[in-house]
Length: 461
Ligand SMILES: [Zn+2]
Image (cartoon, rainbow, N blue to C red; front, side, top):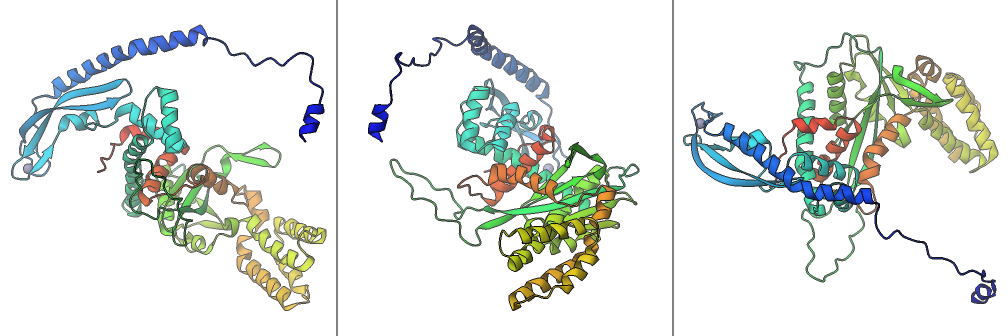
């Protein structure tokens, strides 16, 4: 090898090292200069607005929310918090109701800031970065995009406080709509059909309840592999309207709108969320057919079918590709893995199923004479599966009605919510951490990020 490299003829002109400009373009420098120059002025302007607001709020004693009596001013202390242009401060009065022992600081509530913490727009922007990137990368982005120095832990803290607020709101909404007296959006223009799908996967959970702390110079041993029982299932639900499916290119369909829900919980929890979202949208009227697609990737579909009775009119569809997977299993056993014959056989089944001929397919399977007990067992399982699900395999009809026949939409949504942020190499989650970040990620993907402006950050000890 070295001889070969030596033997290669060198070009006559030596290569030139790539050239870097000595300075950034002038305009870039001007922009940066202005930013540095005006930041103190922005801080001063913001501080004077805060002062003016604090002055108007001064001197009015609030009434105790428990007994209605006017509260007594206990003391006034200087409080500061962090914003994008720097540290703000205000004198904050603490009120107390002696009989109830209830205390409050109304100015902080009105401003929506927390003592000593990152607050306001900066908090929301940092949480946004945490929603799309792992915490250390989000901290680097914060510096590059916002010119703010913050540690990964600082980003984590902000995401937890806003995430808790978002998660709490979603929980409350699904509890509210679980009550029959809840008021949803008007349903007079409810669509004739809504498609609903559910998918799930496992998240690796943290084994320890506390974080590991590194002492100076010490290298931590690698984390042990995730054990059995250290996983939690995270589920995603998708809602979309068949009428809004458009064919972007032949055979490729995409949806204009879709609404996503997610939870770290059981089937009842995800269905409660789907139901709450349907109520919020006003999508289920007296005549709406709820189309439920079940069974992506060998996913136990029973818990989906067991819950369809909550909808008055519904249409259950067994995921077409999942139905074919079962045929594949038998075909490979019969004709050998990767054989052209198996390919052809499954292709024929697929054509017939797509044409709605599930009964013909079952009859044909029953005429097959398997040669070994193993084959016989596999064939019987396939026949049983198709017979049990025949009512969910009227694919010609579903295609004609525009319902679709696969769970591709929910699978891709699930990947976007969960895989892209939660299943990167070596990631482990705490229950609360995953729940809060999921809530934030959902706001972003549902194009509902602005909701955070109307939620109060939750102080966490
Ligand atoms: Zn009171």
